[in-house]
Length: 496
Ligand code: NAD
Image (cartoon, rainbow, N blue to C red; front, side, top):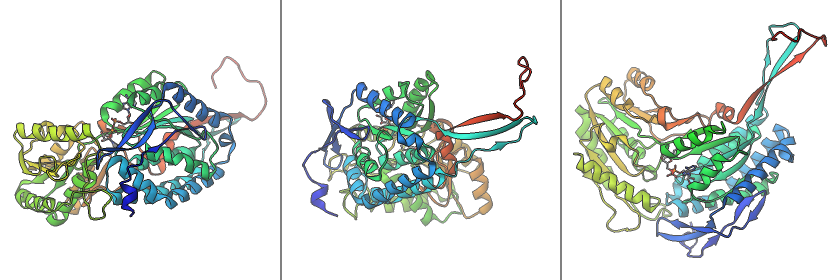
């Protein structure tokens, strides 16, 4: 890859994308490259009037524009074109996201190369979204249902995987026939803006996809906006709760993909080399900045030391560095508040009695927002480090005696996004998977997602599911249509 491009100091300037046009904004904000702490892009800090214009454009496109009159087959064809364009531009989009959030180029490129699959999958579903003919309990009625698009969707996304998490919303929503106003994270707005011209190139009518960039307050304005029919949100649990409360005032539909404190459970009959590898993938992949991070490693006491030794040995070899370099395994933390939060949590864990086995500090050589991959043992599940989401490269190791205790500790959390079980015992593997209160459970694996498989959280990890065939339901309303067959008048004072 072209290093000069990746480290260019030329500031890129972006406008808002509203109603198929680039719309300038008098207020701006900078997007920083977390690797060098330098601004690399200037993006709009939109005002509420821009939000109003974006919602109005999305509403027009939905109610009056050619989008609303298209067949589902035509919508699917546009989505396939968009997917082809994204596949063509995957490298460029991945570079942009690396600059914005500091994650590894190979991780972001993998995501952008995978994103087209989501659009192809849901494009295929667009014209298979069928209603039902409902059996009637009256001879004079024919009854059927229609699956109609929910309307204008406000999508609000976080900084860790901006394009992928937006795609989780766009692909089923466009297939259903919705239009979108997107508010990306203030830390990583550029790839979402960049998609605008690709929607245009694919031939989407103006107003189907609109982007307003700004801070959290702009997201809050989007949630309150009476022109929005549904909010699709990915982000922190506390933000999700505020969104649900605010959306309630208009009964705006919400789907929420929120935080986690996922247990990664290793039993004494597991292959310890493979489990150690899985523990590393679970917490140090993406610098631990994933909602599904396996941040609580639950280890059966008889293999605790043997597993910990393996994990520490591999962790010592993790190569920190420039996210653009192919050899780098862990990039920086994405922004300064997050960097400080991670270091604070390490101190909190130590002050509560956790033992630092490895890491624990900012990286002494790299500076910037680099935190060493950190492993803490002697953690008990009541400590803050075991209860609160850190969203960084910090592993808490917790011992357990037996299966019963493992399940109890695993479920003793307000979150329920993901979990993993490592064992060679097939009975135990499924038994434990069934008892875990989490939206995704991996058996002898970690951090696998697919467009085919529902993803979402139990408890405070969310509301609703993304991906998989059912995700399209989150973007539709069901309408029941009663057709009277005789033309005869009926008793006007009797129901039915
Ligand atoms: P965040 O909640 O701070 O911000 C997410 C988005 O919400 C941003 O665009 C932000 O500007 C906006 N926002 C902030 N306050 C708002 C408000 N009051 N009303 C409306 N919008 C508001 O989250 P983050 O720090 O960007 O991302 C990290 C969090 O996201 C972590 O908790 C992580 O677990 C979660 N996450 C969840 C998933 C999932 O699928 N479950 C995936 C990735 C990240």
